Amino acid sequence: GAVVSQHPSWVICKSGTSVKIECRSLDFQATTMFWYRQFPKQSLMLMATSNEGSKATYEQGVEKDKFLINHASLTLSTLTVTSAHPEDSSFYICSARAGAREDTQYFGPGTRLTVL
Amino acid sequence: GESVGLHLPTLSVQEGDNSIINCAYSNSASDYFIWYKQESGKGPQFIIDIRSNMDKRQGQRVTVLLNKTVKHLSLQIAATQPGDSAVYFCAENRNKFYFGSGTKLNVKP
Image (cartoon, rainbow over all chains, first blue to last red; front, top):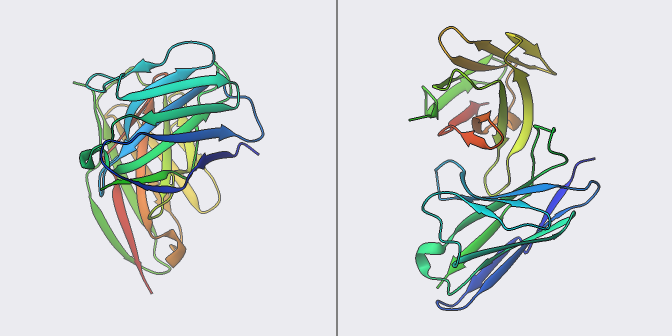
């Protein structure tokens, strides 16, 4: 149980285009989802916290207008990288938490974004 | 500031030996810690967790030790196998996860 999927697993796009990444909790309802970014050989950096039905909370230094997050249902959150540039190339990972009192986060397999 | 960090960035061990990966944290108010394993190109995989009211917890071939006095966390892997080769992260949970910088474990056959 507690499986989180991401789609696509990898994407290559041209500079200036927008890319949407989906995060789904397959066998549980996720009240909270988190989006992380990971550059090569570095740790995971939290970008934003997404609660179903409300606006996402962004970490300091993360542009909310560039990284649009939508958490429309208890099983789906999306991250849209708008007007992508080569420096946005990274590994994007989502995680999901089942409830407010739950501590454990279940991570997705990640999405490799390459911006040309 | 608050941080979760690791002492050893790379650890090489012989297959069959025991591995110990260390982590230091700076926020004494943290009450929940998790170890994750990440293989290349994949998302983090949960290994084991521990709450601050415990000092030791054992899983299958893994043991986590928590020393709150010195704010230190360690992951012990018994009889390390080639499949254990990965990057290991500790994370500190205070409603959000704060990840350490990671330790790469190389298991030599």
